[in-house]
Image 1 (cartoon, rainbow, N blue to C red):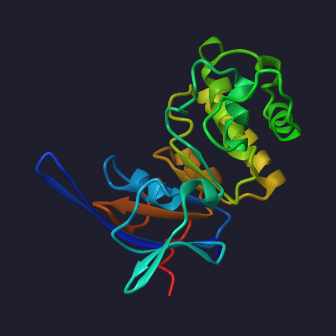
Image 2 (image 1 turned 90 degrees about the vertical axis):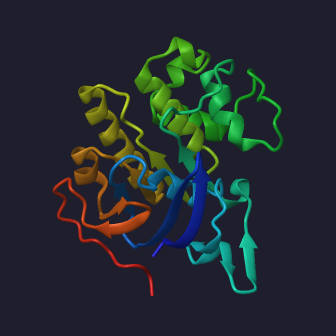
Length: 238
C-alpha cells in the first residue's frame, strides 16, 4: 500500500457548503479517480499534495504520515517536502521561462528563476526521455499542446518524486495525441517506478491506468466507476 487517505474538510463558498469525506487505500501502482465535475476529486489530490489542509483525518504516503489531525496528533508536512509531483489540468507553466527553466524550477530552493544557461543532468534526462530536448530553449507559448503537457510532466518528474498526481492531463489534447502520450506516460512510469494517482473522465485512461478505480461523488467514495473498468473498488484502509 503506497497511499492511505482518510480525510474530512468542510468548504464554504457563496452560501454553499461542501463536505469532503474521502477514504482511499491505494495498493495498485496506478490508481484512477473518476466521477462528475465538482465531486471532490481535485480537492482530494490537493490534500494529498499538501495544497489543501483537511479539518480531520490523515494522509499516509509509503507508510509515513504526511498529514494527521486526529485527537491530539498533529502532523502537516509542507507540500515541498512531501516529494510529490503534481501536474495540473492547465499545466501551470511559467510563460516567460523556457521549457528547460520550467523543468528545472522545482530543483532549487526559493523562488529565483533557474538560469537559462545552467544544465542539470536531472533536467536533461527528462527532456530527452519525453522528447522535448529539441524545444528546450523555447517558451511555452511557442510549442504545441503536447509539448506543453510533456514539459509539465518533466517538471513533476525531475526532482525524483515518490508519487505522481495528474489532474485530467490529456483533456485538452486531440485523440491521436492522447493515445500517444498515454503510451509514453506508461513507459515513463514503468521505467521510473513511480506510483500514479490520476483524475480522468476518459474510459481509455481508466482502461490503461486503472489498476484500482475509485468513483467519487458528493465528496465521498460511492461505488464502481461508470467507465466500464473491471478494476475492483477497494475499501478504505483498516
